[in-house]
Length: 176
Image 1: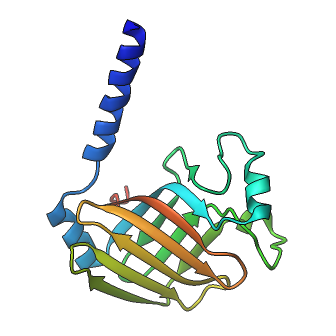
Image 2: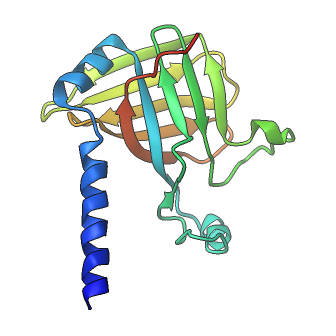
């Protein structure tokens, strides 16, 4: 019983540490205003369909097409005034097969894109990004809370839409 209690306390402590890792309101507002942020994806939610659910039920750790936890902190969307870079996984139905396995997922670097940021009435922002020089991604909508939590919806020309949950952070300075 004591071991169970200790495990529960450890779980609560780790959850609290993750919540504290998000940005504060002033930092979030500055990142959105400066158009210089990183969206770090922590989970993916593909559109639920019978085919996707059947495949995802066979994957280790996945529970249907509902929510797929992304571990390792490696998946992100980097935004600056002059570029958008995406490195995100994709789960779902593709209508056109990609023959190059190095281009699987949602991976691109765009220098030509439209950026629109709207402040929500109840706090937070809705950022719409429309890349002009990518083949597959039609538009991306990033909803950001004042505390730095985000939800990214990616609409594609050749695939079903997919949504990612995560948080925003400042880009790390490039080491020379």
